[in-house]
Every structure is written in C-alpha cells, then in structure tokens.
Image 1 (tube, rainbow, N blue to C red):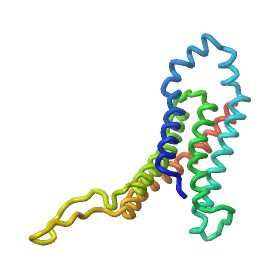
Image 2 (image 1 turned 60 degrees about the horizontal axis):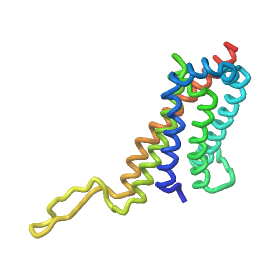
Image 3 (image 1 turned 180 degrees about the vertical axis):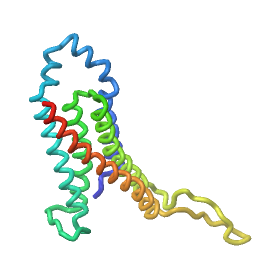
Image 4 (image 1 turned 30 degrees about the vertical axis):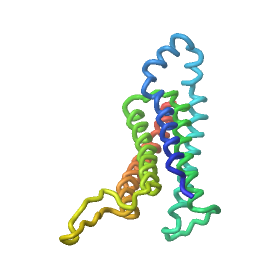
Length: 204
C-alpha cells in the first residue's frame, strides 16, 4: 500500500514545522549568542558540524539506495534488494522528511550565505517537490471522483455527456511534471553537495 493521503498531509505539516525555524533563525540565533553563548559555540563547533554532517550524508546515501531499489529494474545492471517496491517507496518518503530534521540539527536553522544559502534552498526544493507530488497523486487516487477537469459537451440533441481526464491519466500527467522536476533538482543537489563537502574540508 502507498502512504495514505491523510498520512502524507501529516508529513507535509511536519515538514512545515521543521522548516519554520529557518524562517526565524535571524531572531533566535542572536538571542542564543547573547543568552547562551557557550551553547551556540557548541552548535557551531567543527566537531558538531562534522558529526551531524556525516549523519545527514548517511541519510542522503540511504535515500539513493532506495532510489536504486525503485528504479533498478529499468537499468542494464539489475539491482536486487529485498523488500517490495511500495515498502521502499514509503521508506524513501519518510527518510526524506527525517533528512529535513537532520539538516535542521546540522545547520541549527541558519540559512547561511552565498553558496550555502543556495544549496540549502535547492535541498528544500528537492524535498518539497517530491512531497507535494506524492500528496497530489494520493489526493487524486483516493478521491471518489472518477474524472477530473470535467467539461460538458453535447452528445446528441437530446442529452449531454460529461467528459474529462481519468484518474490514471491525471496521475500520469502530474508525475511527468513533478518527477522530472524532482530529478533535475536532485541532480543539481548532488553537484552542490560534492562542492559543499569540498569547501567544508578546504576551509576547516
């Protein structure tokens, strides 16, 4: 079974809650600097950044393993990993939301400057593009409606027929948009991740 629409809505609200500190970091970080400077020093220490960064990297690698499990059938080199496709898809979604939490811990909500700020926003876009896509799909699939974007046209002089887009075609069209967007963002994210790791070691 795919994650239910209600479950996905809860995950969306949870993601919004996790992202909220990033919007207010410019307020609470100066307060931390003034009221709890030693705590802020610990959270900005290289060791803390390295540990949380490696944890985040482990989550990213695991997410890629899940992607390989989902898409391995279409590749020349077949990848066989135990578990059903739906199980790995659910794990992919839940781990994506968990990764948001790890990044919040790693950055303490600071959006950074220049490259780091762009990198962070790309990461947010990667997560939200997937989450919004699966929420929209689940909403269509669980809807009692059989057709969407319906319109009425005259079939004969005596009656009218309602026509529209079937659930299958609606989901297929949405997936073509959000999944391609997600893949492009993931590709950009990985290029920036490699550069981020290089910068982290170069300037430490």
